[in-house]
Length: 221
Image 1 (cartoon, rainbow, N blue to C red):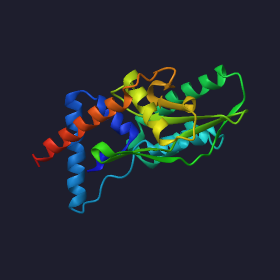
Image 2: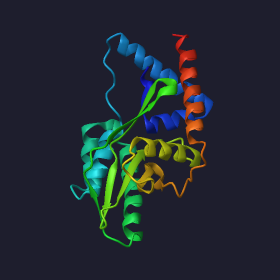
Image 3: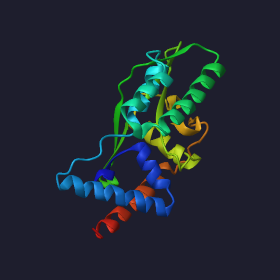
Image 4: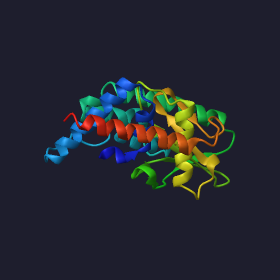
């Protein structure tokens, strides 16, 4: 099942979604898997991927995000409503960071494709496509994007997500990790959502429940 090989942001949404939304998302996933098994073509990749690619290009000085978004919308009208909202929200966060940080920094290219095996449930969590920001002392901030219109990233979800990041990228300092709730222009560091020591327990309990619900619903198809 696809939710056993899952992006961290999607897992956080599933684990913290209200029950009715969780069921709706799982049914959508089940139908997509059935279609795939039948050899039917899916609808394409991650809706947010093109936007995030442009946001990183903007941060690295390789393009203007608002202009890039115009091009993305022209290529697909499905992006007409949300992409401009995402663009404005990202720029609020990015420009605010530039204004308040008192030392030089720049966005740099870092290809990060980390995987966290959750052996207890036979699953893999994917953490990739991060925005890397480098400071004058060569320290980094590694920013992972979270996208959801309905569910803000809460403190509990943020600390579980940050804990997963610390497990997947052991060479980085824990203080370097950030999760950015793009639509709300809000980023979380560990100091914003401090670890309590129960992050692994929370992850396993909530992920196990999501998987059990998927299996229960799958029997209806």
